[in-house]
Image 1 (cartoon, rainbow, N blue to C red):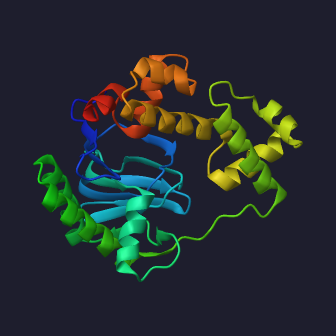
Image 2: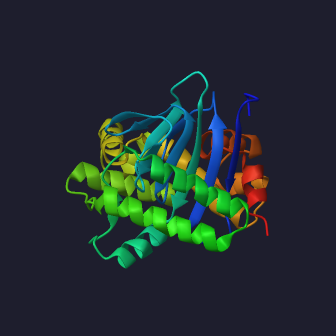
Length: 274
């Protein structure tokens, strides 16, 4: 990383299926607009993190927990000269649904109703999940994880509203997204994409931004990185993963992957080897 004060570990503990873990200290690193397949529960342990969300910017300090639902576009950067340190849990939709079903008080798909909460106790519990996983204590890690998720769902969650394409513009945006997903390695230009869908480039760009919180080219880069993550998790070398998702070469993948995920693709793959 560019700043020697920065460090990060993004990993998966085999005994906790459906969960990724990130513990890091960032100073100059900034996360561009991106989304996650699952949920985010980030306990800030030092400094200030600024998170850019559709509803505005959240500043979170020690004792705070940042909560982000699946597919919500967001950015992150340091909000203080010393940067920020945090311990983050990335539970899958399946894990959240499983715990929600055990609780039994939430109907439909659960979603967090707050972007950031001041909850030092839960923040501490999240760091304890990391500690237990790093020590290889599967019983403690799983127990603590389920306790944290249950606590957050009980206190700060409700039914996640269903997103439906009600307008022609929203339908065009959804169709454009499907085309980009299908033709990720050789995507059409905005003009070509609009022509295929029978609309104008400007109207499609506006509709796409409204629906997905970012323009098509930004969404495509994010989608490529997400697909590269799955390939790396399966053991694909970074150079092969880069070409498979449409990046020109491995340095191109390295640049975007590191900005969005927070660690280089090689380090990400090594943490998941075996």
